Length: 211
Image (tube, rainbow, N blue to C red):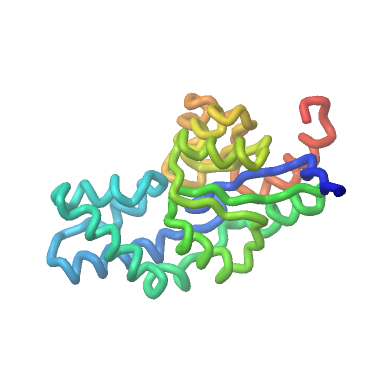
């Protein structure tokens, strides 16, 4: 029996505010949740701190005993309210294509509920080789290690922590809630202005002895 060797390169990407700008859709979801429950939610504030699991945000607005039910409600309405309003971040398609052109695999590792993450990627035509959801911060290292990712690209200090635990290179973009200096302080190896810089960075990285 012959086996196909694993690609020499696997790059992991975070989803929200790394590959996709999900703020408009998520904002619409929270407005709908507020209208259905009668509970005030500052949706403008919510979309400034995307990254951590949904349950953490819900805990700011609902009693602990209601969080699980509200999470189910949110995820249930998400496809109708959040998917079509979401945009690809500048450079997202080109970044995934750059990994493929280098003979590698591009995987998405996100805290978002996996079925909804897949809906976003399908709607925007971002063709990831693998999608793993429901993992946050250090938990992301599980998937990164399992699938041999040597680079992880994210926008949050939680993404940096996941990359560090997985012993992957932490490449970051300050396009989410965390600024460039905060990402550097958290231990990011690379801070790019945004994903449009990623293909050029990757080409240089792969040509260097470090790769």
